[in-house]
Image 1 (cartoon, rainbow, N blue to C red):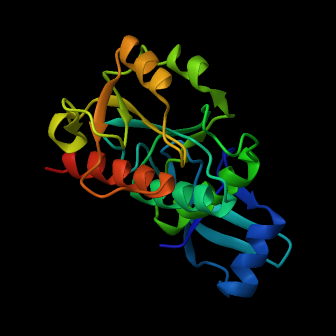
Image 2: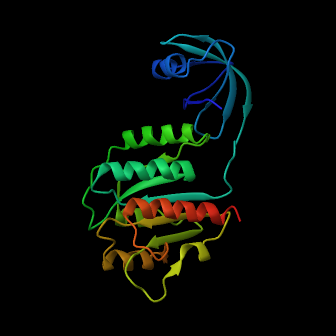
Image 3: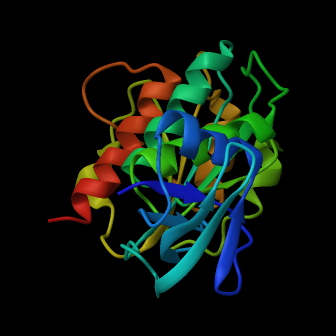
Length: 236
């Protein structure tokens, strides 16, 4: 399947932008009447054929539409502290999109070493990962939020979790307590982890402290592992 993306699709024909058209003609070397697919990132997958193609404009004729293409029966929001190295948070966004995530929020914590994030670039990375993994849902990438502000916006989820590295006697493994087919938010801390004040704030607002396994993980790895655990639990 050759998949393209545009958030605004309507009517029987759709014109790809110049970048996508160039990719069609110069990289993929597609021709008239070849079959391609396009998604709006909202779950709609459009089966199409190429009506006209040049390096600057490609016109697709939409043949049929599949709604809610491979829609997941759970909702996952990962709130993750930006890493000092931009490449690592970008890697997280790419892999989380491939595995399956609905919403990502960069969360600014006391120990955060980076507080400025270019969400437009993260959106482009998510778009590329969505197309590569043949998904029809583009995750929502939020602007960075202060830790306390984020906690005040989490009442709508069925389950709220915060992954914490330090030893806590009652900490449970995420895979054993997360409920399938539910909505959840998981907080992932910075390289220096959440501080004790943040942990207490999270607990007081209904968050459960969890472990992601026995290994001590980097921030971006922890985010990917959390996505994978939730994905696996929902496939059992």
